[in-house]
Image 1 (cartoon, rainbow, N blue to C red):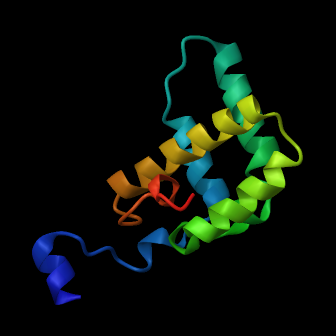
Image 2 (cartoon, helix red, strand yellow; image 1 turned 120 degrees about the vertical axis):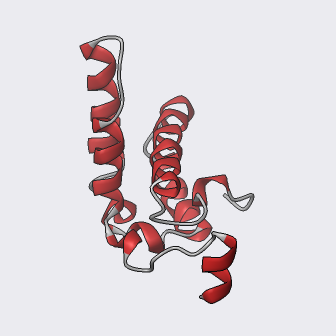
Length: 114
């Protein structure tokens, strides 16, 4: 822990305790959209394809590349590739927020194994 504090990589283990569903909602609430319809499309994708899934119920700090691969595999059976890409981009942005807010050290969406 001391090394993490010294080099600036320490993340409080309690910080990432929020669930992915909460994180994506926080991310969405912090976004500015050109019009109401754009907001509605983002909100709908998150509400339908992230929040009710096992990934949405996970704690942010527990999301790994393998958890994302499992989620992607399940979503590929349900969604068109273009829709899945949009949902994944939203997730990626939400996890960027978690890194910026020091809830987690690395964005699992950026890992090469995903």
